[in-house]
Length: 198
Image (cartoon, rainbow, N blue to C red; front, side, top):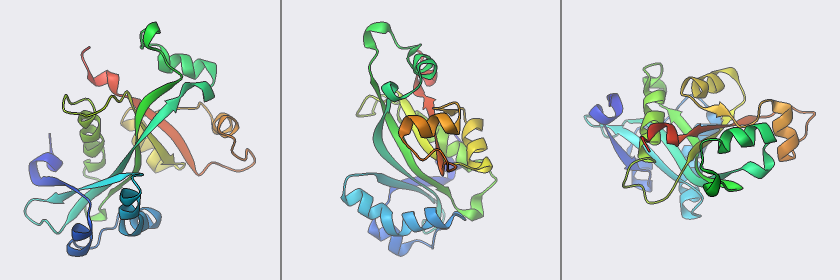
């Protein structure tokens, strides 16, 4: 598949990794703080599970980290046109008000490995993980609450994620946020059905 599968090993984040690995920084203070201080609390509260890829030849070097949790896309809070688009490829008898999803709650690439395509490779890995036959649950969509600035939004769009709401105003209005302020994040989704032949 590439660098991550050829030269790294996937590990579940735990206290041992945090204490024995070199300090991890992805260049975003909020994300770094989450991985260092909050990831294990999220795990203990069953709110999210954090994984990392470490180098095969230097297992103390964390290449990237990501946190996943269960979620859903609620079609009943999405404007009709977008809701129809989400449901379009789902057989009528299988349509629901909520569709199962996995939230990529946090995702960070070590600053020493940036601009090498690892972020896109990581998203491809996560996508394939949830369409694999060994996946323990049904999951139709990946969703992300991406920081509302050009670099992360462009990154997710480049990786075929779409905005759940067409505009910031529409998102704020439908989710009950203050419409006088710019959104800190934007909801985006990826339909995993694209990866299956069925």
